[in-house]
Structure formats: C-alpha cells, structure tokens
Image (cartoon, rainbow, N blue to C red; front, side, top):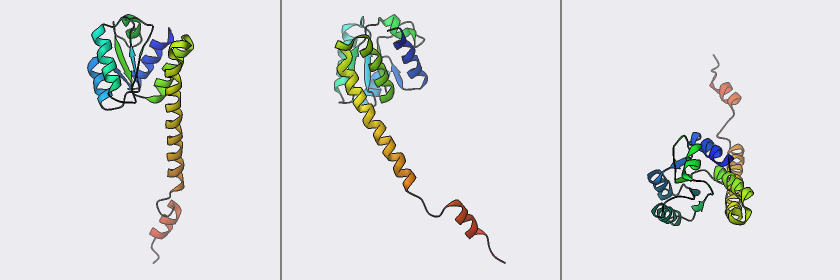
Length: 152
C-alpha cells in the first residue's frame, strides 16, 4: 500500500487527479472521472457524497482504500485528503491493479472493469492512429514543391 500514494502523486503531477470534494464533484459532473478513492477514515457525509457522485455516471467507480486520510494525502503534498478522483483510464487501471494485488478479494472486480475499459480505450486510440496514417490530404510535400516552382 505504500506505493499507492506515490502513484497518486504521479497522477497529480500529470494533471489527471481531482483532490477534495469540489474538484471531484466537477470531474464527476463532466463524466471524466473513472475512479473515486475514499480514505478508510473518511466521514459519513463524505462517503455519502462520493457515492452520489459515483452514481451520477456509469463511468465512475467508488472504492474505499485501506489508507487513512493522512496516508492518502502524503503523496499529494497535503496533510490530509479524504477523497480523490482519477480522470485518466490508464492511471485508474494502474491504481486498481495495485489495490487488487494487495487485497484481491475486495478489489478484483474493480481491477477487471478498469482493465477492460483501458483495453477498449487503447484499441480506439490505435484505430484512430491507423486511420490518420491511411488518409493523405492531397499531394505529398515533394510534389507540392515541384508544382509551386514556375518555369520561365
């Protein structure tokens, strides 16, 4: 579990992490949150709100991690943090993988769901790149240069 706060710090530096209630709420409303993480010692109201945010979209998964608020905030440069949301499917799948490795019974279903979503997203990206490579917008650079030179 020690590496999860460090991984969350990396996600934060990448700009794909919402920390705290307001940013998490905004990310969930925009349907851009893939995984909500709650500290195990989060208040009841915080847990209730996080579950409400997670139910607002089918993309969101909400899990309670076996970390205290202090431990969850340690990788983020904060004293304490009760709720975070990850806005990138690859990072969300990586965090779920680490959680499932530590406690397979609790987090295996979440890991599987996020791994499937990440695989589908990778497939779509690859298909898009292939499509972009196959389409050529007109003549190539050498032919354009040849046509632009005027004969005297």
